[in-house]
Image 1 (cartoon, rainbow, N blue to C red):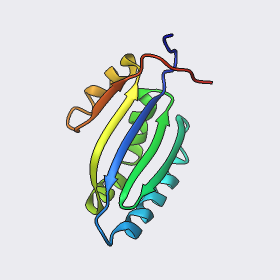
Image 2: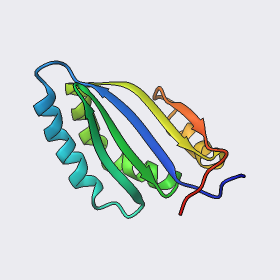
Image 3: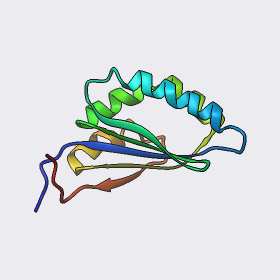
Length: 120
């Protein structure tokens, strides 16, 4: 069963050095405040496993994901001064992923192509 779901999810995993978690959590609050105003955001939040942090986020489509990255660019620059991005995945249908490959060519991204799915 193919999918008609055009959503794009971004999966960054951050590794926060010892003693920097409180500073990183403050940056998470800044991300949340900026993202709360985005119309194409489906969900957004941060999950913690010790010093490993995952940002759980999805957007209506590639345009929504790109708008988000532009919106939080300055905050992301601050975040990467505190923590490193250990892994970055982007998931979506190929048509939407194709719209991201050019603009994100300078970033080390692993793309996952959604082939089957249900979205309600």
